[in-house]
Length: 308
Ligand code: NDP
Ligand code: OXD
Image 1 (cartoon, rainbow, N blue to C red):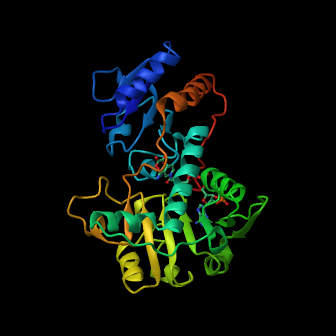
Image 2 (cartoon, rainbow, N blue to C red):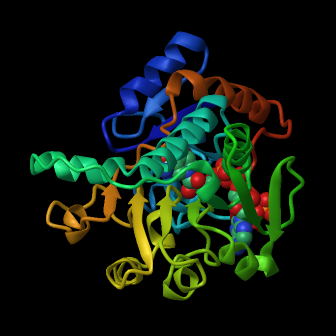
């Protein structure tokens, strides 16, 4: 049995080192170096080239290097005979909480506007918001959404949450699927933390934006295809939304000449809200590799029927 790492952005050595440091017994290979294909039983992947998984006849499990698994479902060589796992990791959670909080405070205090003013050497005090003015709505109350909601309640924010099934979280007003409109009507800062599935693809559109109160702000940290960008630009340009902080895009990196870069009310970050740390995540991959070898149930297994 052996583990194959498949990712193409130059970060594979960091992951291989983390394995070497924590458990030298597992045979780990980089997919673009020579390796014994018949030995591969588990693939640890991030945006793998489509079709590649089909070359491994003894493959049993595909493990995402992150929390999201949309890119695995999109690969035609993934099939239902394979198990799928994802990352649930304390660092990934606190990193997301902190990123969302940072965006909320930047919005409240108008910090992005001051950056623009600085670029023009323009000294001007602007009005700002206080916590009492903010009603935060989190779409997707899973591992990351629920933890972020709890962290925001601790900071004294008024928090709403929306998910497929209703949640019970102290201090958070929660809504289930059917109550989307009710949730949106009360939300003036909307955080998207949904998984990307056929149902959630394109969910951040004109119709949804129109149900938010005037001047609402969007913090999108989930996946690029959730957002219909033309609808976002229209809602901002027509003055319905006050702006958006966007961390994820359908094609990453965002192209250099993309007009989103220069929109004065859209604030771009390079998919950095919360980045899997190999040093932290590899431990759970090792546990799952050993569980797979001994036919035990896996940790953080994805329900492939549900799609997340
Ligand atoms: P989870 O699977 O734990 O949570 C998903 C949540 O979304 C659940 O509450 C689920 O409801 C809800 N949901 C799913 N489909 C629907 C729907 N159709 N309507 C309403 N609610 C729905 O995921 P995580 O919290 O771990 O991660 C969320 C996403 O965040 C990831 O899939 C990934 O895309 C993104 N992400 C982005 C990062 C970044 O750096 N920008 C970093 C890490 C993750 P229920 O609970 O009822 O099942
Ligand atoms: C993830 C991500 O899914 O980084 O973990 O987006």
